[in-house]
Image (cartoon, rainbow, N blue to C red; front, side, top):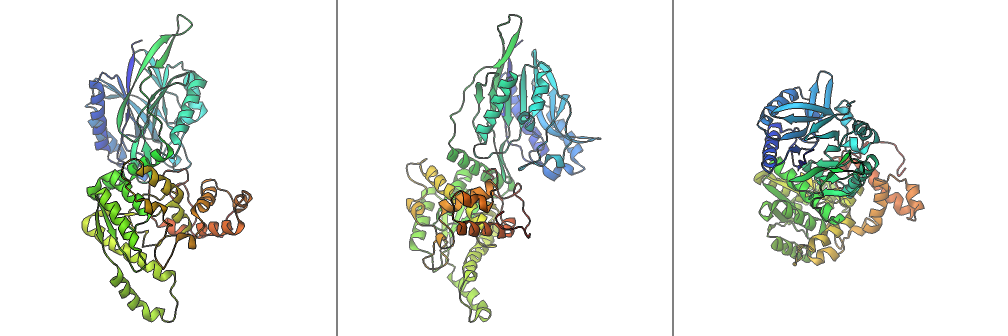
Length: 548
């Protein structure tokens, strides 16, 4: 056997842009070939991008595939593996193509189609039935696609073919802690079947999903031979070698140990995921930047820091829109942060607009006390201004609400919820504080003023208002929300864990009755295993007993 050099191409591919994706593969394949690589492996559905959803139901997909294949014919001198949608007379398959010398030499169909969480592949694909392997430089290599490696049968079937190693292509979305989970699965499968496994994943943001890359190679003893950088496009190389075993006539394949990356903290990986999701959504959508309302509070402060890290300060624009209830220190803190980050900040009072609304509505509201209506008018005034600026200058409005607020409806429809992307949508309020301190620790000068972090949070929509006028303390609120949303516990289960019955019932009732708000909210990057969006779908109107 001759040593085999493999490049794992953890790359970003734009959904639906098959020709550009094909050319990106050509460029990476040539780069790998020119550095002495024999095989380059691209992620699952690299040709279409992932997830293509109903785009793959379009009648033109087969023709688009053929156009992209013509582009791929440029590649010579290196073998390629890549994911694509194979349209056949029998239906569509999530497929992996083996290409050499400008021609398809083989094909593998994904056997295990996930239909849970964010996945609904059974809507689109037919399950493959057969194991596939091929020879290269004397090595017999088995093929799997994503979910196949998480299930016992596909790799067990490959083992019976006496393969030397397994190559797995993936489009595995990020969630906090997911990388550790992946490593554990790969190590367990490698050791159980005594097979080295190389794993390549997509990288980048697609709508609400984020892919973290993190190509991995694991040897048969569970040793990690490669753990590539995360959240970055990269060609990660592994070398498959043949070494004698205790039996003189038998050789055993193994990956030569390469460099591995230091592990990321939960705060670091979460922050990078938020930056990646925002950056790719804005860039792929064609906006020239973002605009946000900077309030002097921690949510907008963290949102702006993420935006600057994702897009650069020149593409981030902030507007402070004070009213009679806005504290002077809120304006000071907003100006301090904008100056520190180099972001342009405009201060525009909304007094005159609010007075016009009050005057117009006075005949209707005569004799009625002020309530949430007037508070919501302030938020909606600000939303109108931001959307007008977005329309005029082509900057996407970045909303700043967090998961805790979205859960209980502590937000205003067509007000602070108005916008194109909610970067903190899947981030609980307690996590907001953790991420703010994490971001500040990266620089000698804090990018989020300390006073913003330690002040009691407030929407500043009425005199002396704090969030805790309407909500439990965030530590308690988030603990209840996590159990109800992430763990699906009932009210009784949560109360049994020591939470006060009245508070639990209040919180869960707020969650249930605000489903209609969340259905109208902007998308945001998924960082948990139960984000508001495609994996948590409830009817807006229903008679289910609250909290069960």
